[in-house]
Length: 324
Image (cartoon, rainbow, N blue to C red; front, side):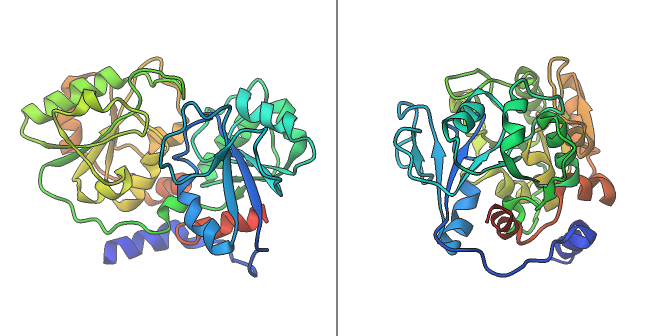
C-alpha cells in the first residue's frame, strides 16, 4: 500500500486539478468514437455520470453490431435524444459525420483512446466546433493536439480508469499478456504485431512462465484459449503480474501506474505515439527476446510515468466538470 500511495503522490503532484462546485444535473451527452460500435471506452464514465444525474449515449450507425446487454446506452443519429453536448473521441469519418449532423449541438473532444500525432484528414471539419478539448495526460494531450491539428489548450484531467487503482500483489512467474486485435472486423481495424505477440507468449510459456491473458474487447478469444484468460479487466489483472507484455496501447500507462512493468511488442508497420513506447521497460521485435525482456522488466522513471499517466484520483469528476 505504501508503494501505491507513493505512486499516487508522484503522479498526482503538480498535475492535480482543483475541483470546483457540483455540476449541473440532468445533462444529456452524446458520444461519437472512431470505433462506432465499440462502447468499451465510454463504459468507465457511466458510474460518475450517474452520480451527476447525467445520461451518456453512444452514437452508432445502426443497431446491427450492438452487443446485447451492453450497459452503455446507444442510439443512431435518427433516434438520439436531444443533447446538451456531443463528445467526439477522434476525427475519423463517423465522429466527423456526427458533428455535421448535429449542427446546433455544442461539441467537445476527448482522447479516450490514443491517436497517432498526425493531423487527421477530417480534423479541420471538427476544430471550429470544439468548445473544449481534454486528455488524460500531458503526453496524450500533445499527441491529441497534433492529431486534431490544433495548438489550443488541452485540459489534462486524468483517466477515469485510474480513479480506483488495484493494489499490486504480484504472483511469482505470472506474466500478463495484453492482446490487441489480430483480425479486423466491422467494428474496427487490427494491430500489426499480434503474430509476434502470439509467438512471444509461446516462448514465455515454454520457459515456465504462467500466462494470464488480458483480452482486448474485440479480440478473437479462440486464438488464446490454450492459456488462462482473465475474467477481470486487464488493468485489474495487472496487479497480479510480475510483468506484462503486449502491443503498446492505451492501457499501457494505466498498468504502469499500478506498478507493473511492461514489455512492448513492436512491428515496422505499427504506429503509436512515443509516450506509449516510453512507458515500456523495453520493446522486442523478435519472439526470442521475450523471456529475457520479461525477466529484466522495470518501470520507467517517475517523470516519464507522470507525463504518460496524468493525475490520478477524481479524473471522471474533472472530465465531467469540463463537459458541464
